[in-house]
Length: 215
Image (cartoon, rainbow, N blue to C red; front, side, top):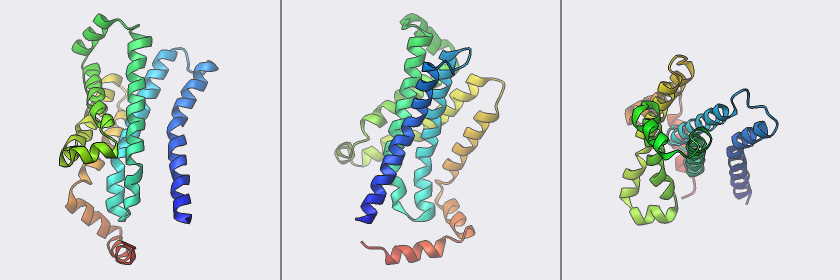
């Protein structure tokens, strides 16, 4: 009972936490706190949070392997859906407030501007992942579900590249995101994870906990 209440509490914290960036953007819009270019502020805010939540989603598997606790994976779907949510808001903000739904202008931007091309591609690839995030889809697709959802890694690469090409000059923040993504990719290598667990002294406690856990 206590464990169930703890999981429910964490679920609500993650759920409400995912809405905080949107609440901040809405608050800024209502009270004029988005700076001299509100459209740009909304574009950057939604895009930044889409990328941050995507990287946080990718961190769940390494944390599970590092700690030996499968509970981390419980939050991966919600975080991934929030990433898709903010990426969709990012795209809609660009299409509506920046482009005024000018389809010809949007098409020209997608074709001629590389950072928009890769950003649009990342959003398009996120769509089937979000659509198949349910347990019913997992059962229906079987092993194909895992192969499909490995697209999250090239999507993350495209998202970081989108950010790099967007800023052009100030590369500090994109470099941080790129570094985090690089760590996530390296930690997928089983040998690296095994060595890291041994260096941190986690190997034996994890095995002991696993042996004593209930089935």
